[in-house]
Image (cartoon, rainbow, N blue to C red; front, side, top):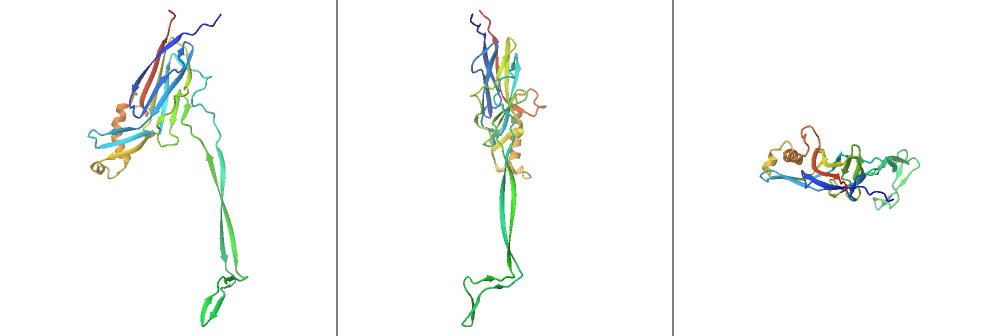
Length: 272
């Protein structure tokens, strides 16, 4: 007798946008979902965002050096026995020692130096290559060596961390750009209720913001004579905007800013 085919789950994806120019995520089930389990995929992308003042006289372009994707699960849980995208074993740091040597030579006095002087027609001239060092003088050679320990480390752009979270980081560049995942499932979920809900929240901290470019009129710069730098301008422009785009309910008590949310939800289909 053939095994009974598991009942499917029709999943609906709903997105809540905060700052789509800067970051976005879309959750999906690449192989479909059923009453037992399913693989969860996440298409995560990053870009840059320009924030301007109301009169358009001041603007700042920003990117992100780091961000965190966290999952809030209802009716299901991550299968601990399955591989998670970004899992890696702790690795010892490889080190090697670079040796550099420097040689110095000094002339120690104690004898006489003859320059091979010649008298020609009442004038004194120096013969070519005729300078000699007498036995009383000698050359000392000193060799010094320095050792430098260099560590070979490798940073991964996506790392699975505790609390059903994944950390995304810029590796080769100062800020993240383009797609960072989507080709491989994040994890495998086990279904334990008739209705499931999976919310993926992509967030960052203010310290993760990278300033790419700042533009401002000279009159605005005069207000920051004590601190005429890009950080001062960006702080003014970003403070209000980041509060407006934050999707977190408790915006005052959290250090993170949620910029995008994607939710998958569905019910197990009953046999008709």
